[in-house]
Amino acid sequence: LLLTVFTILSLAGFTAALVEQRIAANLEQRERAFHAAEFGVEQAIHSTDLATSLTRDAPRSVPANGAQVPLPDSTVDGYAYRLYLAAVTPSGLPAHDPASALTAFHFVIEATGYSSRGAADTHVQSFKVLRPADWTGGPASAGCAPADVDCVPMPYPPPVRTSWVQLEAE
Image (cartoon, rainbow, N blue to C red):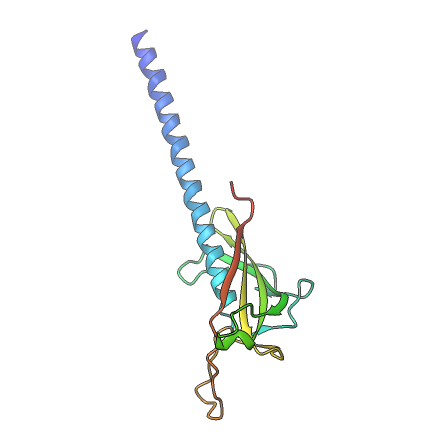
């Protein structure tokens, strides 16, 4: 009778350990998906070809085929994102700020990260870039190409994150 009780307790402990191990593995996969989505957001913010022609109905989708881009340090984790222009507003900066004459171009990124065991995490990130009102596109960071000798870079402020949402977060 005592041996049966010990066997039942051992099996219960073993089962609990297996469940906890699966929970920990699932949390790790969810965390990997979270970081993959954040990597996708960073890639979108620093893309070299932002444009006012990107709309919600015609966004830039990376990758274009709807699959996922592998992370640089992983062959199994990846990301995908949609990027589009949401609004154009005045800069909102105080009049004494040299950048106050610029216009704010607000972009939205919908990035999804994927882990090897099927976990996915989606982040929606907004950011703005300040540029002249007639700007139609270019990199988020101002600068000149090394070969462009006629370029005079204007020190535009870097992209500014304006909002962030993690979809289906608990």
